[in-house]
Image (cartoon, rainbow, N blue to C red; front, side, top):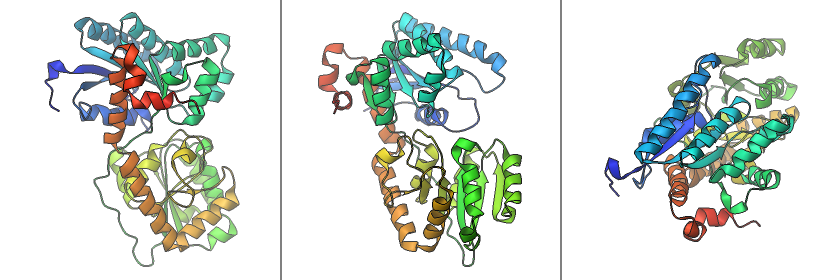
Length: 383
């Protein structure tokens, strides 16, 4: 359906666009790049909440974001402020923006994607907990990545079940074909992400150094920023330096090329939300080895669409990598099932449609919200 620009309601997609890395900044960038939702009802606009430079300039970006909310509301086109919430400073910045939007009379969609939010909440002093509680109860609707966080928000903040929806992330289809492995080439493993202990990178290096894995023809590419020198030294110390390549941080285009050259993506993390890197691998038909944490076990099935290993179990991780490298049938199964699941559930179009349906419900009269919108009705079925 075509709508003129002036007829569309505007949505501010709020997150730190300027920061290096993936996460919701990438998803919001993908969404903003679409310009409008698939139906043409809403026009997407970026709202920078922090900036990618020095933290000292963060208050400047925040003040400008507040100003834009009030100006947008005064002009009458701003329908929804979509706030993406992570841990730490994000809570306080998004708290300011949430209450600014409420003061301006604009609807607020609070989108929780912080994998460590439960532990972070427990670490907060009483005023910090009160702020989070107020934010979740003041938002017009809350979006979470999986049932784990939905139950936590309901139980911790006493938010009504019908005010929360589970919405899976989405990523664009890859424009590049996979690069097949040549005869005699090692099985190509890829770790893609920030080099952090919670991502399981040390476990992965130790797994490759186990005697059984030393006899397997495996090569690992580690693509990501962070403590590169630390983990490179660990690989050398473990005697696997020649089998591990560290690329450092890569831009989006280079990261996608890395995915197309991989025979398997490995993410042995201890906590996650719904990692974009897994969805991007599946969109390319690359098999995934990961841990069943966060929303991962809610949407993927072990030995069907992904190969699961227990977090921290280095011998099991080594065995899984060896098995996959030697089993073409398992490789084909994971590739085919993952690609099919991506096309059914994780495209950007599917994500945009689900999110836009929530926007539409928020700007409707409240009396018919649940009755007319199946996403919210399903979310309210507290089974």
